[in-house]
Image (tube, rainbow, N blue to C red):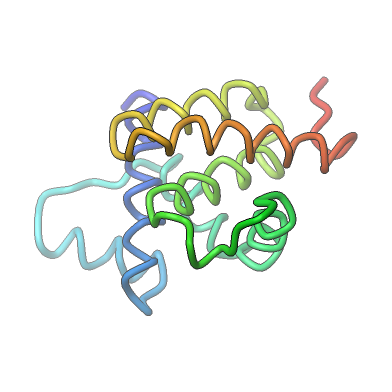
Length: 137
C-alpha cells in the first residue's frame, strides 16, 4: 500500500474516533470483523500515535487556530490536523512539507472548499511554533 493510501486510512480512523468513545485499536478490530479491510501498519502507527499523544496535539491545535475554538472546526479538518501534527512531531523520517502536503491533498478529497487552505495555514503556524523540534536532518 502506498503511503498516501495509508494516510487516508489513518485519517479515516482518526475521523471515526471523533464519533465514538472507542479506542483506535477497537475501531480497527471492528473494521476487521465487518469487512475484509486490512489496516496498513503505517496507518495504524499514525492513528494510534495521534490518539496516544492527543493531549499535546490538541494543545498545539488550540494554540494555533487563532480566533477559533477547536469544537468549531470541521471533523475532517480536526482529524487531518491531528494526523499531520503527529507526523510532524514524531515521524522524524518524514519531511515536514510531505506531512503538510499530504494533509492538504486529503482535505481536498474529503473536506469542504475552505478546509485545505485552512489546514495549510494552521500547520504552517504549528511548524513555526515548534521551531527546532521539527528540524530534520
